[in-house]
Length: 155
Image (cartoon, rainbow, N blue to C red; front, top):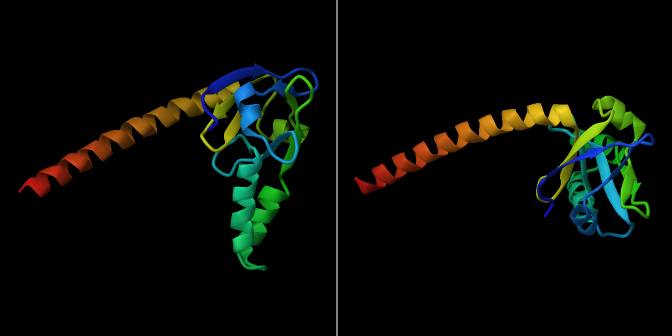
């Protein structure tokens, strides 16, 4: 699983070193990762062969000509960048994605289990704060529902 958050600095060529754990998880038919613009947030989504295969599998399940298949193909496959590791374990982030998400110098590389995200460091800090608030509120609500269910079952 892709786990933890790492802050990395881009060099002048837009290269970052992905954590060793991420590089080993990305093993596949080529030595690198697949990345494309996220659907859920203002960041880059990335992962290894399994990540690519999962998205490609969803696309292939949809019938040819289906508008969702076309949209996913355009967004995922058309927006996909295969980023190979160099000998130092670095990838070069595509200029278009850096511009789109305001990635200029420092980035946050965030492990999310089966994939990871690459954010502008400042944007991720704001996003992370919002996500903690959502998680706090969601867990409080879930606990309240569980208590009510237990009380209802006890009567």
